Length: 401
Image (tube, rainbow, N blue to C red; front, side, top):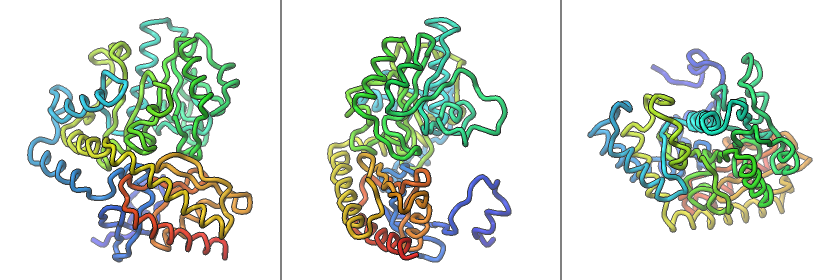
């Protein structure tokens, strides 16, 4: 069978419009397509490939567990899941872990837990969920409604109720919205899809204080920021604010689908036997790979290396901008960075992505005005330099039409 981009159009549901490029193998931060053209990967599978492609620790874990046991269902527990859960709780505020397959599923579990907790501990009136405009929390109907982008949730009929939004970093608007009827507040400590926007110190601390005042649970969606992406194991650890529930996915498995919702013993107690579940969640194969990824990332060497690499990217973007004047700013933290296009290039982020691909560089966008970069946390320095050289050529191409 000949596998081409045209085959996609004939066999796949048309909700995606993928690139013409079909990668077939990867090593570290480099990828090769069907024609053996090489690309440097500054996209990281949208902040998933935290250790690049085919990292030996992940490959070894996959092979070793693949020869043991793959799947059991949650009628029985398994060793990799228990080891991984222990490591996550040892490294975070949490006491308890629930495993799922994706960030959306972890967020769905977090929201259901928050509603259940409010019903059990307070009363039926306490059901409001507050989230923020331009946020992204997944594509299930509950999570896409909580996500603050109507374009993703409109057109599917009546939405889940008692969900309200206000602007990120607007503490006054948030204070006006929250009340004793609020059961939970869901937020990204650094908005990803919404444009790589960091929370201000006053805002994030104010949100925590108002949640405490109104007995609302604070849920941090760290699907994109978690597992080393910002230079700490989880972003909350450098913000001086601890959530009640946290969700983690993407980089947790280094490319293997796995997610987790983590929380305290007191809150977790409200998901009693039978109240929630997942057939694949916490399966031994996923947990074994995730354990290897977690162990590799959660070291001083890797986490400090993220901050060192961030500076190299920022210096590179500054040099490109000094020559071409395309960015108004570079936002983000660690290796979750967004180059914001200035007024001359407004709305043209995709043009830069397409030009980058032509020059052998994989990048991303966050909306129409931000070029997003989420490379491997251990990307070699020489790959950063070469990737920035290719990106500069792409920038020149867009400018020269």
